[in-house]
Length: 421
Image (cartoon, rainbow, N blue to C red; front, side, top):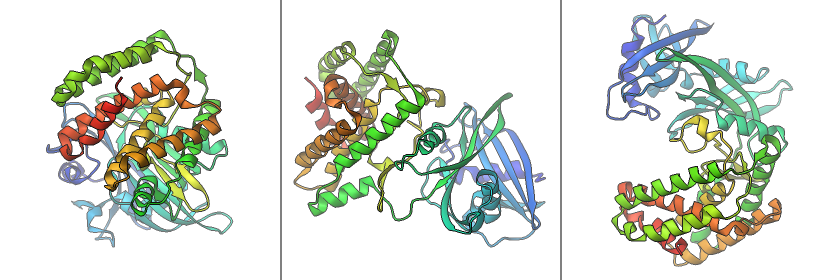
């Protein structure tokens, strides 16, 4: 279809934010192109690109549209000029957006599409549509660029929660799944998802900063309630299981490994390793709640405040550096709670107001009060375990800040000192 596509992609891929191997030229070992449709003379295709520039095989999804002449599309959308025509990144082309909507939300008619900027690993397209009843709606189609074998937890959990009837996540509308090859092995998984777009929303990080700087109250209590509601529904819909001794030993080993990594990266932490070990050993021996599905990478940036709706949780993919199979395993819901508590510390520090410690403490207490009111159980009843999860997160943060933002290292260091016995 496009005989010189491999060369075009080799030149184009390094300039994309979602291309994961930085400062290296692509080494495309497998290129599978599927022709999907032809609409008004424009060919729609999908390229599955297996790249081994980093040594490990990474599979990228590149939707394509092929035009006979230059199209009225953003310059950034152009992959290159081929002997077959002008090749564009389909995510920026309304022709591809319309095709994708037909596969994920049949009956919707596209009236306009715009790509969101700034995303790191996916590409999201805001679509103005008309549904089957003639109503005007806005939906968001997210195209996954880096593919992984298996069910994407972001799609899986948002679909589960949406069907459970909660307004705490965007309504799930449909998904596109497919298959591809990775170094001779056939894989399958999620390619794209379409869901409700919530207009006029602000992310919770910005809401918190504005409240801090204005001296206003931040509604951490209702955020705790919303978090508990999502956890409660995930437990009911996906089930729970009791903690085993192997679970405890596995998590304890992970805690210890990250503590050693932190001590190597941040020399002052080495003197605290004995206290860190004491806290971890104690937390490993106390009663633990059952394991369940949870968010997995929870902080203020993963929540929006929607007009007349309140807090809405986004992005259930989990920690992006963990293998997808691990991200789908039951875990401690308290890990999400710990993540949000750490996020309050960061917001307080980023606002640079005199009220930093007091604001963070109030936000923590209100969040935990709201969580307990909905969950029927207070996370503070598992105080030793919650402290260990917070400490583990703070040690990870210390490594990140030491390597990337030394001026912010004081934030996790203060938390570590506070949490240690």
